Structure formats: C-alpha cells, structure tokens
Length: 389
Image 1 (cartoon, one colour):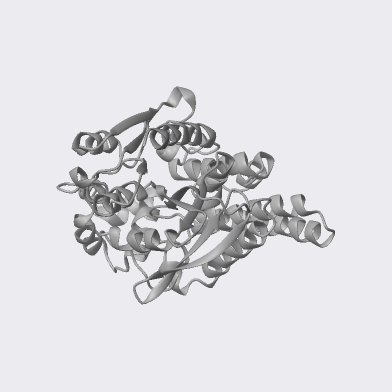
Image 2 (cartoon, one colour):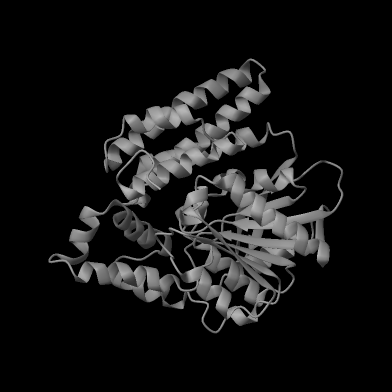
C-alpha cells in the first residue's frame, strides 16, 4: 500500500505514524505536512522534520497543560511522543554514540509519561523484576474499581517501544474491558540502550512478567492473555510454548522462522557485485534492518547476526503451545510472507488464522493503517475464547 512515498520503508513508517490517529496519537494533517518536507529516502531530513513537528506539538501540549486544558494537553503529548519515536527511527548507524537519538528517545518517553498521567483511566508505571535488573512497563487499568479483569500482557518486536504500546494495543483493549500490562523486553526500547539485547528463549522474559501480573489484584489469573507484535509474533509464541499459565495467545503476526528473513538479506546481497554494501546503500529498509539488528542484538557484523538468529525458530517448539492461539496474517507482508500459515500448520492447540486483505486496507505488515480492524478482530476472538473457557 503506497502512502506518500515510493520508498517502501518511508511509505510504511509514515503509514505507521499516521495510523495512531485512531487513538489520538497522530493528526493526519500534521503527518502530511511533515512528510511533504522530507525528500524520498533522505534519512537526515526524516529525523529533522519529524523532530521539528514533535517539538511544535509538544509545545502545544505544554501550553495547554499550563492553562488547565487536560484533554488538549493529553492529546498533543500523545502525538508528540509518536512523532519523536518516528524521528528517531532511522538513526541506527551508531545509536550508542548518537546524542540526538538518545534525546529523541527520551523525549518520546517523557511526553508519553506526561500524557499517561492525564488519561481518564488509571495508569501505573512499573519496574518488573527480571534476573538481576528490572523491565520497564505500564499497567493500564479499565477503572479504579479494583475488580479483577481479563488482562493482556503485551510487547512489541524488532523496533517497538513501550510508549508506542499504548497506541498500538492498550487503548483498544481498555475500551473493551481488558486491563493491559505493556512492557519492553531485552532488545527493545530503553533496555537496549542499557545493554540488554534480544534473546531467543523469550519464556525467560515472559515468565517473570506473568509472576508479577499474578501479584496485581486487578488481574484475573484465569484470563491472562499474551500478545506480541511483529518479531513479537515469534517471541510470544516461543514464550507460550513454555509458559502455560496463559489463557490465550495472539500472534500479531505469525512468525515461524526469523532467521529465514535475515538470511534472505544475505542471499539478495550475494547476487549483487558489491554485495551487502551495495544492497544497503540502495535500499532504505534493508539498511535500517541490518543496522537495527546489529544494535538490538549487540553484534558487530552481518555474519554474527545471521548466526545469532538461527535459534529464532518455532521448529520443534510450536506444538508445545497449549492455550488457544490466534495467528494473524497480512496479505502483502513484506517481511514474513507465508510464515503465519507455517505457524498454523505446526500448532496442535485450539487455533485460528485470520488474514487481513489489501482490499480492506489491512494488507500491510501488522496491518498498519488498519488499527481499528486489527483490534476488532483480535478482541472479538478473545472475548469468545475467554467466555468459552
């Protein structure tokens, strides 16, 4: 689905940013005028223009808050958080030494924290015990009644952030009576900046989150759901194979073998005269994918990344999942096409596949631009499964 750009990666990320308008995380006019100032494939302009829009919108939010306009402040700060995240997206050449990348990430975190404090529903910032440290998270509650409710444990994937999780899922869950514990795992959000990198045995991440969730009075222990987005579709499935206190799992979308997607980059590069260097120079999405992978996995070259991702497969694992599992699929997925079907074939639990089509606006990876449709289908399925259980 082309959106504003011929460059596939720019098109997708602009659509991703704009899609959060469904929950006050963007305004279409702001997206359009920002993208109008960014030439095709110009990553420096992308960062500068999105940062400028974010700062302008944050200023609106700060002024509104000072004047006592709570709703206006909240909405502007949510948009600013999304725009700061978008501004930082392509700054992956050397994030550890990039002061502007760190500034943008912190601005996204802070504007979201300030917006969350203005939500009409209760929110608690969390530090979830994990090995010898903690994972950052948020507990989003439907209300302040203290009543136990079905609760979603939610994490993103290869490039998601905790702050994005509210717009991507929690806002829709709250409207439907689900509490949400959103968290960043190793390799995600602020954790990677603090030296925690991705690991394939994601049950080691989710089990401590389940342990924590079961100490929260508002969590119904019998209706605990795990949802993972993008690479999180592999991570959540892997965790569900070993963590059996879950009532259901949603893979958004299904990923059977992440290594295959990484190895495909090397295969494409091998067909070019100058190999990987030429491929990354020509293709924005591939350049970003390689750089982001090296950073989030804590590695120095592509050979190491290919080797490290070999363990990221559901082969010999998927049949250990026992809870009902919903596998989502996107007709035009540019990263994991065909993999949701492979996941479904390997599952032996109660299972269902839903494919989002291009002609209904949901054909992009993780159904960017079709957030309402994604939430409707996923939560309607969860309502049915949890009621039956």
